[in-house]
Structures are given as structure tokens and as C-alpha cells.
Length: 169
Image (tube, rainbow, N blue to C red; front, side, top):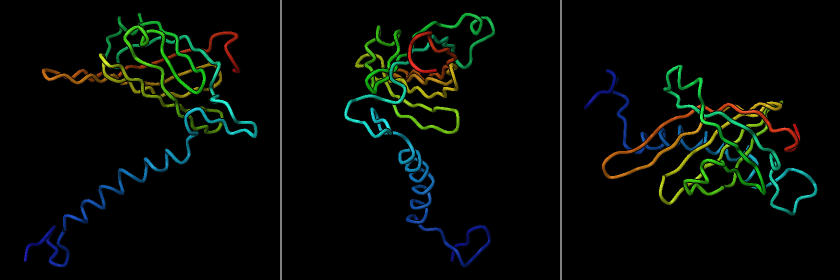
């Protein structure tokens, strides 16, 4: 009889490994999806439109690569991030065929956490995650583009402020 960690009473089986892996992956994802507001859904009594909880807000944001040197961090790429009709978009990403996409929201205290995945037929996908507290947005954007000869996979840091007159603060 084979032993595992010196114990003759327990022999791991493939199904046990699969169940354990599933519990570690599926349960946290289920908790996120059940606590998040569905795309375009507002938790109010009057719902019938495609309005989202962040709709009308626009943020001026600076974007830098996560591994950028100090010089690059002092010169971030300027962008405008927009929430409208239950969808999220980036002004710069529109130039590269990234389509606006539904965003998900979770409110925790005075913080609003959001998540959106933009895709482009030519330039891959971008997953945007962020936290909004008052007029300040902080988050990350991960851009991946798979090719047969190499894959782009870069993490970016986002810091932004709500534009004046663009929705509630």
C-alpha cells in the first residue's frame, strides 16, 4: 500500500483533488457574482432602464505600467474612463477597437468596487478593476493579447479623479 505523508490510512484519489480544486476556485467566484450588482442593474425601486449605479460619471485618469520606472510613472498616459447606460469604456481604448462593455459593481462601506472586461477583435482584452471612493478612482487594468509567436500580458496602474459636473461625487 502506498503512503502519503507517511500515513497509510489516507490515499489521495483523483476525484478528491478535483473536488478540492473546484471548491477553491468556484466558491469565491460564486460569492463575488452573488454580491455584485448585475450589469446595468440598479438596486432601486424604479428600474426599467439600462442604467447602472455609476452611470454619468467620467474620470480623468493616468495609466502607467505596473513595472514602470520612476520616469514613466511621472508621465502617465492620460485617459478618460466613462460609465454610461450600464457600460464602461475608455477613450483611448476606443481608438483600438475595444468595445464598451457591461460593468459590475459591489458597494462596501463608502467604497464602490467595479469590474469590466473590454475586448477588441484585433487587440485582445482588457480587464479593468477599480475602487472609487468619493471623487478618487484607483485600480488596475490587465491587457492580454495572445498571438502564435508571443503573448502580451501587462498589468497597469490607474489613478483618476471625477471630472467636474459628470455625475454624483
